Length: 45
Length: 502
Image (cartoon, rainbow over all chains, first blue to last red; front, top):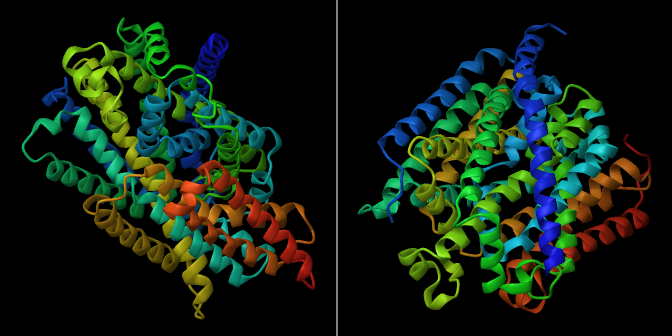
């Protein structure tokens, strides 16, 4: 059981860290993307 | 039971929901007369926006509630489910399996693929089954949302909580229908992005409050599960936990979801090119883990906290053993009691936005499929883009009415997970074979696809009590996928097409 506890703690630390990294990238970049997206919708093909 | 939820929190919630609704309506200006813009944002969504929407769509209140219930009752073993979801999304994102090819075909909806590869009849049948599975699946969303509001806000202490909650959920559904029919996929993408920002920050801070509290910290959680449930709450392969068959089935479900389930594969179709479609799944991989793991971890904190709290221990742990029938109340009640005034309002607003952002994607997908893949192919007269959008809008309103009647005012059965798994499987089992075969196997045939889709109906056997008592749900789920694959291969070989369509 001890091995499982260690595994789950590592899984949680890695999973949460990866998500924090992703969110730090997505939030500011996504904001710029929203503007780009609106601009592309207004552009005729 | 009373919580820290006050008038200030209600003001935050109402203000946030009103803002989102206003924004969704405002974005109607970008729709014009193009059905492609309404249904898939003209296929121009950049990577970060598309990924936020991919995670936002999957991060619904129903998922949060379901994950919390599973985490509370199964303990750490449940974390194997977020782990297989992560693995499935990573494989799709790394290889571009199916999603890159589907994006390259410039589809508006997934059933459109069935006509390009097989025939118009298969397209209409797959669309019908997708909508049937999807709308039935959605039927329990409002009930789960209502459960969250009831326990997080302390409404349960009032005289007629059910009526108040039903009215709140009805108003939310009406608002989400309104902005979805107005702003289409443009509104969905932008509102999903805002929801992603609020919820990812809110859930992480909420988790911080939980883990920093000495009664619900990590050591306390580990001790509580060790003392009450023992080995099975840590080892998911244990025979009295999930077991191997269930875990494999879950991996297949998450993998197939990525390229066959309407609202999910829609994020491949909204992406601005094949590379962005693939990268959306890769960048969204941690989000797939977090959406399922974080609510569960908060619920596990509730388990530890309630075990040592006098009055609550008597309710949640009568005679010192956990009463799992209260699992649905644990996470929202715990958040309502633990988080300070103001912050609980922000988090609840975020979670209700999660409720809305899943509904908007689902409503838009099913409305688009009804219009684009059932009405348009069956109608002999030519339908222009504007008419197609209006048919989709009408379909969205009808589904919204169905949700109000079926999902709120009608009492659903208690076996929530069985209900979700079976309704999803009706379409997914057959579609998985037909899509993979259609993309990667030259000998796939129309008859094979037809037989595979119809074989998905065999999944209904899972809700027959006699069958589900004889076979574990994991074995049943796996058998359904295997059965459809065998049917697809056998019928494709027995009845080959004269010429391939793609």
